[in-house]
Image (cartoon, rainbow, N blue to C red; front, side, top):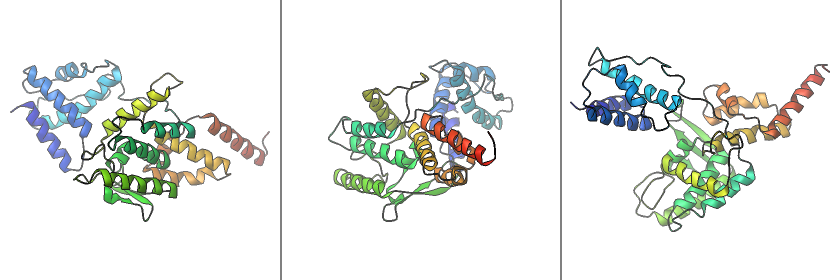
Length: 312
């Protein structure tokens, strides 16, 4: 039996349990092809895993560690077939991720991104208006880009101003309320999509063309073109802005608005956490970045508490 067949059986088993494994599946298929090309026989060894992991294009320790982490559960699965299959230790070559400072878009930049989307080629189909609407939706709701891309038509209830997010990270589903301006924008998009995609059989809300649903890779690629067109750069020099940074921006701007309105931010954070689909409130605080305006409000809030408490 080929290694690709073992991967297919493994993915089928895991997906029956509810796991999507989209990225994982793609990498495991790459590993299977590598193993077949190298004529590797069972049982798989730690050396086999390391050899493939070190083929990561970037050669960075994090990329290598991520590849090993993707192989680890697959190796455990194979161990039920071949007992001598190697166990891949955790953190064998270091951590699998690190936090890079997000780019916090201001309102002007978000508007510029949406306007730039209108220039995306080709202009005769849905790609420009789809990206414009997607960017606006994520900026207005803080949805994860993957959640926004996967939304189905029946999950968008504009009459009740809400979207149902199914299979959300950590939740079976959650409801995301929409502002009136967001509802209006989505209504406009629905009309345009319906006009251009009469023959489409896709149930996806966002379409890349008349027949093809938007996927996260296409969305990320288009967003990369937009921020390059506008000359947006990360002043920290760590990396380029991501579509996901719009979610970080939403959280920062929401908390900033609460501070400026004199609201009790700590009391409101659990609501924001649930709205974002977080299981733990600490995950929501993780999203807050030290933008100057937010830091200024935080300092003033701390000084007010100090005065109330009798401090100097």
